[in-house]
Length: 118
Image (cartoon, rainbow, N blue to C red; front, side, top):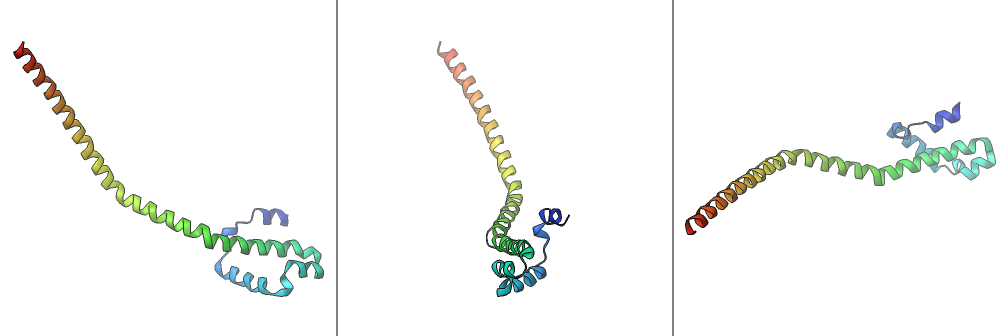
């Protein structure tokens, strides 16, 4: 049914051109929900739905889309930095292994010194 189509409608699929056309009608005084209700009460829900779609897109433009762009920017930055991080992590791992080898040598030397002193 038509109501099912509206409830499953993909709001993000509306083109900019269609949004501009809808915004034109939204500005008309006769397209305000209270005025539509006086003229044709059956059309009021459709009018309210169109106003809601436009409000949704304004909210997306002002808040969600900028955040999505920022997230994409940081994901790109992370993708570029990840190989450098992995290189540094390998260096840190190698240094940790070298420190362990030196500690083992130190322990052996202390044991040799302690054995010689005894």
